[in-house]
Length: 187
Image (tube, rainbow, N blue to C red; front, top):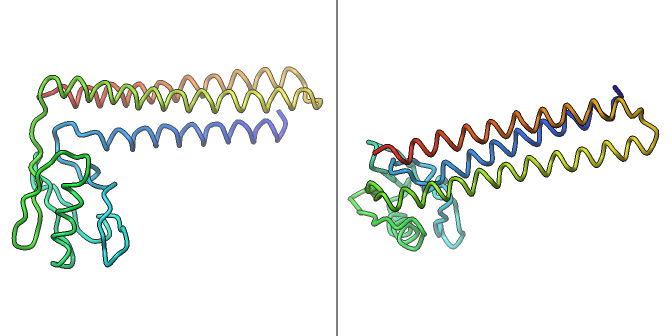
């Protein structure tokens, strides 16, 4: 097998692994009724006029399964963090204490759980589409190599390997789906 084909195969594997990691990261943002610092990771707080990620101005901890505790490093940031949470799409009511903000995560209703599962299925389908697009791009590049003179057998073998990689990573995404679905549906 030529070096170019080997390069495309390694690029495909690396890209597919990144697609799985991205899907997993997106799934951690979906609230399953358990408190997770990832739930507030995307929040931006006004820090002296600059929108700053919450993780850079405060410590986010989970004292128990249904509570997030946000302790800013500067006490004057409490109001800004409170405002950012209220203006976010989290739908949570922050409780401001002396030096921290407490977020109680309510258990989702059955209907909300079904909506969350739909959201998880959408995210995992996006991950699968990304993996399939990578396969398509690599196969296109391999066919281009064949037109440029690479042996047909090498290209066919490489396409088979790309398909194996695709199948492997789609199974990984399906595993993420079933794990997250089980997490959401357990009360």
